[in-house]
Image (cartoon, rainbow, N blue to C red; front, side, top):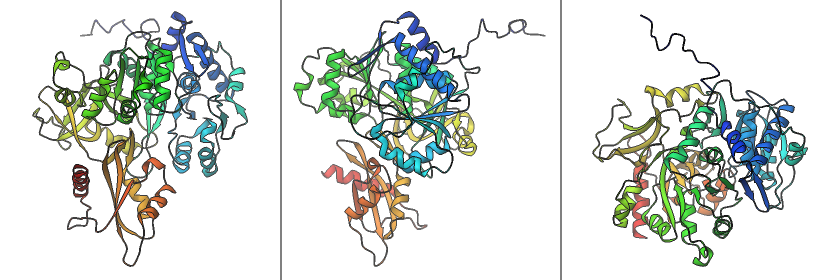
Length: 545
């Protein structure tokens, strides 16, 4: 017997349109063309203007023969061009690859090569690293376009054309189209990687659309929010907020560098309502001189992620008028995919209890199907007892397509029909997830993921090092910093300064160990390093301090 609800009821252009965040800017430019879209220093754009600039960018890229299957990389701070790239690049069918501006030349070179970047937009501030990275490329180099900014002086131009000149040659009425399939790739983001080279996480239009909308619903955000870019847009595409602000018909307030004085000045000048960041960002605001906050009488709303916000951050944020909401996620799930949803009555609880409740990883984002704590071997749910440890898993539409050119890693990540995060947690009685440890030994420092294995690989290359182990050391400013335990070869010698200098020459500065401890590294009878012993030493030392 045929199903009457399928017969003659086919999908067609009238009843089905692929989901894409590109539709957000089209709508907002139509409905609110005169509302402020992007503010940066003395520059101010409306949504009508921003939409036209994005179409010009798409048109200019298309003229450079950039299209479906091509990658456009950007090495930019939070400037208007970064916002525009989130729309202009996919408008011509290409994939946007936002590069972490804090990485070293070798890492950038790998990403440009692995992602086969056809075009690179870059800010002169990063010219030393970018120039080195381009020199390291074996294959064809991307077309380099310089993005100049009146708020930055220095660096040097590396390209043959400047961004504004590129836009001038583009068509403001460029006839872009939605993707033929909402599963088509929209962005490429590289993880820090726990071993070997970083993995390229591929986002699709559907997921970007859904998480952009989920940010509005799960926070929640009122219409026309004024959003300050304290979060790098290269982090998971700014947690999808370039598209969220367009859907919200809000205003992007750009910020090149996170500095308390600049932040409070922009909040006051533009009546900022929302911002995002790691605990270190809020810590800097809390500890800034009170005089910087004068004239800000309204409540700020902040998303916080990276590590569970400590009591001092929650208490301090409340005192300076910032209401925090804790979110949790990874690059592979478009940034935030879980939220510590607040319940009625929490506000009246003592501060310590509020901090405990608000510091959890929480429940699924509205557009994510599920977050679960499962036994990693059986994939069965752990009891909701707050004690039984399991691994956090995600499932749903805001989960990556997979890892670029890495089918084995993709298969492993999705084994059993769930995305494996590698984070260990418990499920509490009310259904909220609480992280207990990180199985992959990732160190989260100031919101940046640092692979202990990557740092150890560099240490092992030092001629005096026999054994190396890197663990997180608690830090009041950064949350966590890398600490290296080093066992030297017989007859060899090295100082802490020498080891630190060695690391600085081989990796980004934020990954360099802040402390080096010399001595025998504890191992099991089979020679496996006992990192839990080292972590306990760090916790004990921090407790004594």
